[in-house]
Image (cartoon, rainbow, N blue to C red):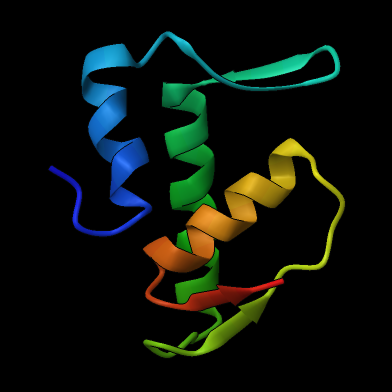
Length: 82
């Protein structure tokens, strides 16, 4: 069971990887694609030396990329703020 919010995606991908997770307009992400995108975003934040507990401001309209940024910030150890 997930203890942290971003772990929900990484756990769900194991059992429902090909199921649709998000949809915005004509574009949809399955859980596998969502998990990969979140991991890449988190890795980029870590490469930029985001410190544990540091804030990551996410100011964007409701889109797939916004969801990736929110979960990615959490996966990198940061705290997202809107």
